[in-house]
Image (cartoon, rainbow, N blue to C red; front, side, top):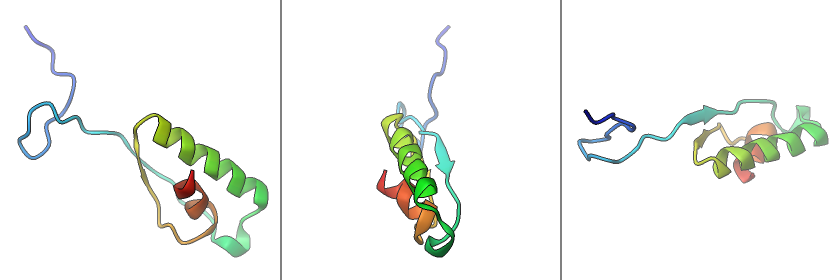
Length: 68
């Protein structure tokens, strides 16, 4: 018996669904430099693991994680 290890998208066999991770946070005026640096690293790690990053991208933490 074969074990299914990925989902199919739009009927295409073998096209794996990647995890989606949402990062939400403060806008620029409320974001500290340290928080932005940490968000950048989080975004970088999400990308390195092959997951999809979802943000509002409107500055601050969301923009920093998108840049990561």
